[in-house]
Image (tube, rainbow, N blue to C red; front, side):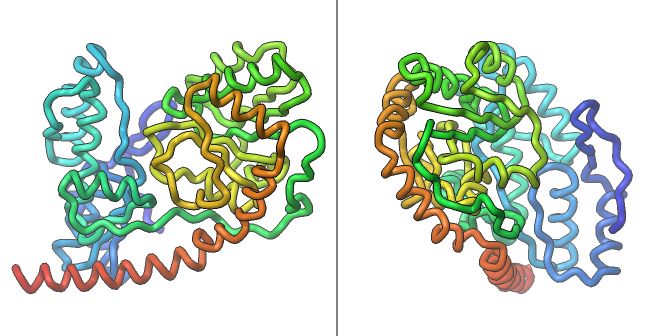
Length: 351
């Protein structure tokens, strides 16, 4: 491992690496010294762009995984005011000034989508963890996009690896970034509506931090059935999944292929979700609910009365996880490296 010196963004502590001559020289030396056979990036900013440029210069095959193309910025006037500053920052980091599509209310989101498209276009092959995002990338002008869902770190089965027993309240787990696009507050509203009619119907565990956490806590104040854990280490998420009967995923129109789906399948639990665009891992383990909070609450009440769909989703989860297992993912990635190598060879022959 060779650390690259870089300043960090305050609070978030994210490194800022520019696509500079120095960065490219460091990467070229690293790739040559380590006899790297392929370059695979998971970002669209300075370091990733530099790595893709060096890969092309060395005639190495390159792959870019796009983790989200569904960026959301700040809508309205605030977003329009911030967009020029964001464009200047991106230009300083990547060496290219974004050229977002004109029109629309979300200028920052359009800018970030252009950044993602531009970076991914430098790769020989693009990986999308979901089919619906792959289609969006192709419509944006990226012709070589393969679909490969995410995977998770393997773990040993625990004592809680049993099917939901169906007794007592329906136990729901919500885990993720507490941001407006994840729709935590509407989820809590729906759960409280169910609990107002039957205080013993649900037990809800919420894991995560972010700007929506405080409003959600205020909303649920006084309800012992809704528990907020805040930040929880990733290695402990599996325990939370096994404590639940069902994992809730409440984003709509935002997510690509959420990791929480894979974590739920690994733990043998079904997924309650509201976005019909999401498909990976949800044929069988997924329970598609209405997105509107009142209708969502009514759907929850039906699940509380009849647990058969919850049990069927959990039973399907284990089999569905095989497509996401680390060994299957690794084999697929290696095959895609081979495809990228062929594309890189054709590119070199044409130059």
